[in-house]
Length: 401
Length: 105
Image (cartoon, rainbow over the protein chains, first blue to last red):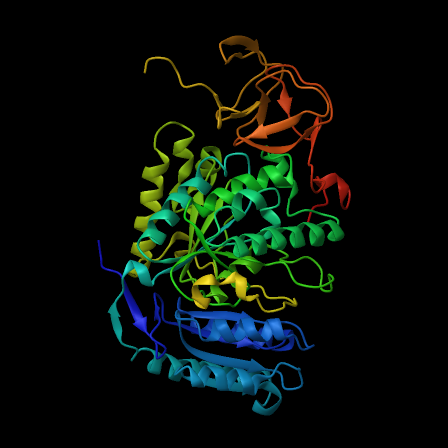
């Protein structure tokens, strides 16, 4: 197998991809940005953006973390001109990270056609600079891997999720950073989970953040539970939670982070995705890709996505590895899946064998192999409004030490 | 092994439900803890069957952990799902709740 390698960034972090992102800073610039990306016809030129015209410090923080993500080699910012997004502050943050960055303002560049032409030329310049990034060997302990489940059913918690848990255990053992999330899908597991925290104070923070999630979702009127979950045999939020929880494996939990926080060292981290304060902007994450974006903003090089009903999504910036839990779903959607964890249900493979297969695919992706969703061109992206308070000192005991 | 693998899995010794790992048809003979039970309906992969007779108010245990409570009685081998159990936390919803029968979100 090819060796893992990384694109070395000025902060010392390494990326497993060298993506040019074209980022629209308001929905009004979306079409122009998308045309630029489409006309570039390059698997490593990706579209991201924030649709809102009102300011939001969470969205600014996430956009900044994404534009300075290790997998990103250059950035083109697309502004209409009158939106409130602070394009100059974002440009400066990207420039300070050592990456090439250009800004196009549609109102100043002569409108749609002129900006699309200017954008194509800008991407070519950015790519030429990004291509000079040194490529260096990468080790397991340098990997940051996030996990999410989508379209869960009654098989997810038996096959794909615990198999990802095995992979996480081996990665953490090797010193890598692993992130699991969606505290609304951990309702019911809070006590079991807090027992795994490296300090009792962190355990208390974990219980509190799950209680926050339960309260928030109760006000929303729905748990993090879709009709397809029920059709797939899951009956309650806590049943879904117990299955989702097994993605975390069995390592101690080293810290609790919020979207965009970069874990300070290797280990297993829980991401608290539920906004603080009274609900203001609606559901915490309106669909799976909103969660994936947050995992990437916290530095994830790639995402392990488990699915029972059969999700087909990928993501901009970081490759997604699809682990299919249900053998019947796999038989229908095999061309969208990287791993058939349903073999466990059929008695044809063990959790350890599937876990090892997932780890092998992580390393292959970090060596440059395209994942299935990546090769199919899936680059979904969504970012909406949220508000967070910073994490307290008890949440990151390793940083305090 | 010469015997075919069971269509049911026990995830934890304390559990009072079993998970269906291969689709079951009404009339299939099931072995539940040594007792022979006839399936009363079709049940698809990922769903749960009662390992013991359960009554309203009983906690349902899966992965060795409580995943909700019964709202009605069920016999050994009966389907355990939204018609006879509920969350102890947040109510679950189906497509019918929002936007009509083919709504969804």
